[in-house]
Length: 200
Image: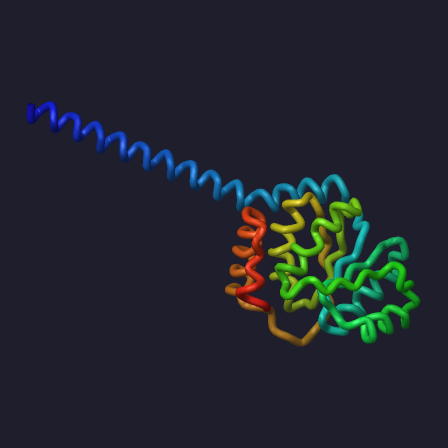
């Protein structure tokens, strides 16, 4: 009986370890798919739609809107979205100075941080059949914006081309970039951006 009991115990332990390994493989495979989902779709979108058909400026500082206005002047067929940027009394004069029609500009104030700059507008871009955006923000902010855009825009098959607005600030820390990448993945899987906890 003791030999039989030991054999059953061994088989149970073997099956338990095998089940654990299987679950771990499934978990790692799911994590890899999640990590690659945005970048792979982004690469496909870049290939299918190589030319931008819209401008997204992550507003808030005059030099960003000024860069977007100069870009809009060079591409008169493109619509501009300014996400939580300057108020109308400050934003419009920047575009007016370069004769960019106000009809081409959407001032959107839903976003409270960089992650929600993208999550609040991505459905609008899809509905309006925007496939490739010029992404305008400050040089120090661009690494974080690109990381988030790769996940959020990429997951919706929207490509982007970065356009840097020069500034004198130091590049943001890897911690902030990593934190917002995690928030973007959480939003991708749950629809929750975490903006209520951290507004940056």
